[in-house]
Length: 443
Image 1 (cartoon, rainbow, N blue to C red):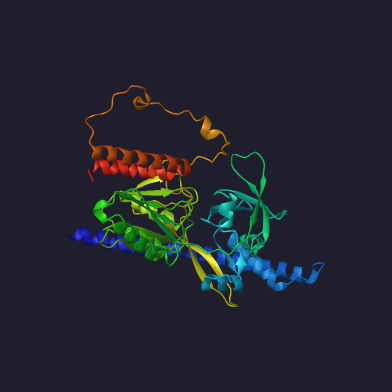
Image 2 (cartoon, rainbow, N blue to C red):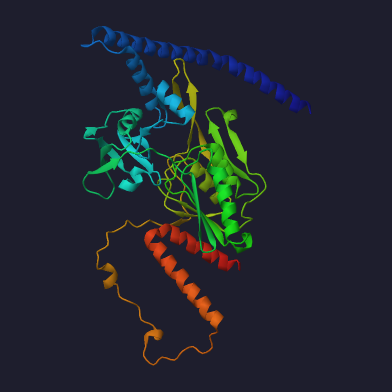
């Protein structure tokens, strides 16, 4: 026992000596770093004064300071930035008055404006803007070198006015122009519909209305189908959903889980992270669930998809998501402005970060690009012949009237699925998976 005590005491003394030997150089290094920072700030002040006193035209000093702050933040990552008072006020009130917009979520990449996603039903969506598009010019003026807020401001304008954006798109050899008519952007967070015995929940954004609207719409759809026993499964469609409120992402995920972690955040300090867990209660009581994502699914939608995938609660279908796994904190400043600063990263329940990687679907399904149809395309499609088309065929005498009606119903459903496959291949694929899971489970 004495040997253990002595070893412990020796360790304490050894630590004391080590601390004495290391503390001096560490303090000196810290002082050196502080001195270097002050020298850089002096350099900044020197440059500022020279610009203010010697530039060919008298500069606006407030704009100089704002540009310097924005430059600092933009050098960190694409999502950090400065919000002048008017932008900060817009964010807090969540209203833009009567301004006209395009309906796109954008970020900045290599000096250009990159489309995260066009929002459903907005002018940008109707004009054919796609996730991943790079906007190089707005009304003929290059956006290269502009801040993100400056480029966004250029795209705003009166409702009904026209804007011409120049787009570079993967797979297209040359840039091309898109004409868009600005409109007031009013997003419907959730749209619900039934497809046969399945329910499709289309989530376009995560705002304060997302979870309540999803919960109420899901309840109404279940009643429409005659109760949960008649529901085959649910498709949670989050394609082109740019994200939004973390609280809503947690509530949407919790709606389909009984227990377990949903998401955690980790910052610079070890004790600054948070962990969010599910509460008991699955709104569809374990019915099959398919999640649809694509390259326009970002942030909050990736949290939902990643959590349901990690818990093996859902099959994720589509293409790799955008990969925005960072948390931004808005910090008010003197003068009524604010900064938006990246302070932590999201982690899925299995401990993986989606930052720059995104969520990989369990089943990769590309959405084919729509091809223009010729007027004669339907007429030239060969018709499949069957025994029923042959002259003098034998009729099926063993089929009852109920069986004939069931066969006709199945044929009509098959035709509807075929039509949906032409309109939305990914959704049709997801519904096929649900039908297979339902049949496998004997439901």
